[in-house]
View 1 (tube, rainbow, N blue to C red):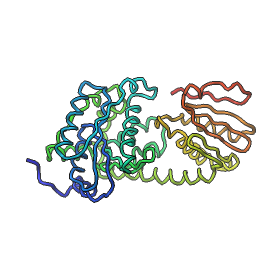
View 2: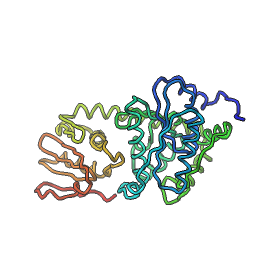
View 3: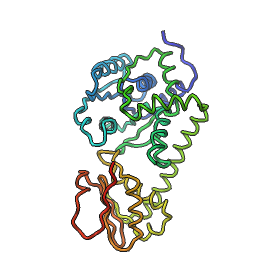
Length: 346
């Protein structure tokens, strides 16, 4: 028998989900977090459907798909099981985790877009903490430390992460009280992945030594500050943009040169996000690349800077940043007399 529904944070989220009039498309892997989210959404009056992406990367993948399908049938939630390409993920130059994530979101967006639906994923506060700890060692700034936003967009489709303020332990407690069946992904035990090492070795030590409520507030505040910073930098970028398309943007060189160096770097980084918002959303040039472009902007004359999937051409009046679909093309010497900056190894 299921425990009586209480008035805790997950029940408050259930009520909010029930009141939201938008159609939802849930990304359901079969893990505890997404299965709890599936149960929280069951019974909504607004349309709700689930998508399970079967990458075929694990021996137990068929069992996961069966569990998700059976649970959705019992809860009355329509579900689609979509086959992914495990070989393509294994051969991705950006790593299997990044490639799988990109593939999942692309599939979710494909299913949500025709219905004007909002994508729901089950990220939680532990995911935010893991991201902070991982990126502290990568030299990132506030935006990188913030991790996933509670509300964002993927290829124009809204994405909502309603569990983002909850600790994993809160989700597991609710799952146990409500007898939620879920599967364990053994890849989450593989220390070959950096995130797994952080999750299993560092996060427990941090949560054991720091008070959880202030820690939760700090993670939320970092995310809020990063969102404000992105908004301010984006406003500046738009003011400096002479012309733009999906894969190319031209900035006013003279106005860029007049900005403080930190703001100039931020505007260039935001411009890179604009042109790199393509098939591989994790493709990012090294921060050193951005710093070198800032230096080139200050020098007289034209120049070219090359980086992973990007090419920057600096003329007398403009700074053109363009997307290159094949990373090898960005590394080809254009055989000109202009300055060429070789990309930092990644």
